[in-house]
Image (tube, rainbow, N blue to C red; front, side, top):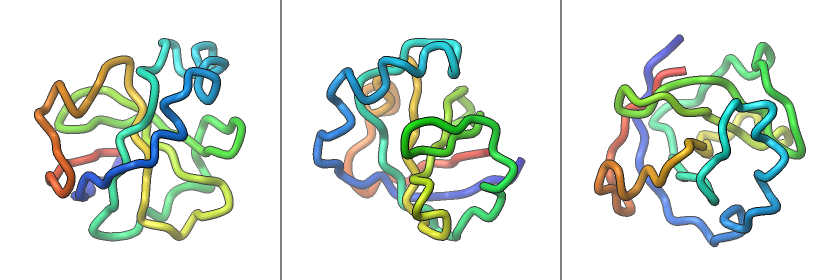
Length: 108
C-alpha cells in the first residue's frame, strides 16, 4: 500500500442515486453510502492494473481514509487521472467534518 494526500472536491450528485452502487454490496461486502467522496490526489496513483474489483465503469481497491476502511475507485477510462472516488458504508463528509478542499490521507 502507498499513502496519498488529496483534497476533497465537490461532486455533481450523479453517484448519489442508489442505482449506481446498489449491485456492489456483493463485491464490497457492505452496502455503500449513496454517493462517493471525490478526492483529487496530490500525485497520481500508479497501481491500478493490479486492482481487485472491477465493475461498471470503475476499478476499485481496498484502502483507508484517515485510517478508516473504505474502497478507492477510479474510472476505468481515466487511469492516469488524479481524481479518485472513495466509497464507504457511511457518510465520510459528516464523519470527518469534510468540506471542499479539506485535506485527507488515503492509503491503498
